[in-house]
Figure 1 (spheres, helix red, strand yellow):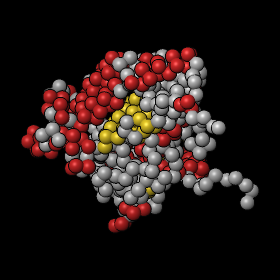
Figure 2 (cartoon, rainbow, N blue to C red):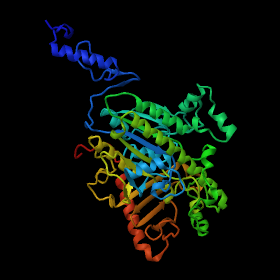
Figure 3 (cartoon, helix red, strand yellow):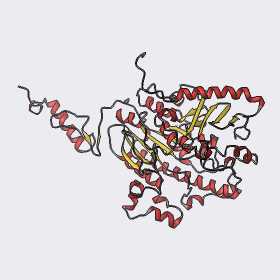
Figure 4 (cartoon, helix red, strand yellow):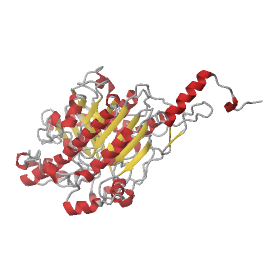
Length: 520
């Protein structure tokens, strides 16, 4: 007769082990398990609907705190050359980590950029090439799903934005994004009860929109950045026996540029630098006024530019203070040494450069170059600055390798791990980087809504599809992108070569459908 496992007599050793397991489970020091028969069930339910998995990640796989700001330019970190911004905590990440000063996003607007860096694939490969899509097309798994399947517990606070957050509030989540903790707030002021940030404070008697109307800003205590970090700290402090990943996606320094007043007051506005602008920009950049963008070239008064810069930097200062809170929480919980911190942004902001503000279908440095810092002093190099060309799609294969997980052949990024560990030179990573913006639905009224950037170390090519003119900049001799060489006779051979290379790279990047498994 087949015996019930509860009837089987256990040895004294098994009885002792069973007693200890039961004690630790009861104390919350081990995942929820089925101990009645002395058999651990690694798939037993964890409160909140997640199952403690069989761990597939490497035994020394780090926790991952992935901080992504919104619309932050590359040149906004104190330790990397900005003498005005106040970022002591990000500066610490730079000093004790690896910073990439030539990192490029894959789209100058949010949704395609985020779709790209969460999959390790170009926007065209995952079919998200614009903002406002109805749904996430499920063209590739997010890295957070891959981490979850390997044993990570994944959480998010703040923005997500893989599909429309305007027509649908909240946006429709992917079928499996890997997140089991999910505090959604696309932007601070929209969504009502569907915005977890607004609802959190409304449940406690605080009307965020009323505060904003009353003050012109939301006080730091109630600010969305503070709320997102509070949710991250709650997650970090949970006790668990498996690694975790948390996506901290604050909305700042995105417009409307409304930081708490005390942060603005730290700045002497008259001392702030002017944007990169020449009178020639008004004519040169106006040649592309029929290309979709959120502004047109304009000569702004100096005071207006400086006030804008002060508000922008003040929002970054507030983000930095909250990063200090995160570091303290990691240290107090004993997790700092085994946590990888990534600091980056989805894209930049023109901030007055060339007479433009905000974003759209352009590829100037202010938009496509972003911060990218990796911090894990126990495993990675310290105080290393790399000027190599890198892309945000390179983050996914890097994370998978750090966790000891396989990297699919469909992933188009290239792991940064050799540079991070000092096994490869920090001077070179890729021959070229790319950026894309394709939105055929915005072509109404004669507007051009498609563009591709192809950048080598020396040259940057910007093609606006359907426009007779493009842009070619010598990035070594003209790093601020004032002189367009598109019509320069001396550069026609270079131009044709770069157009061919850009075309070849675009063809290589697009979605080629399911995996090929046979000759026909």
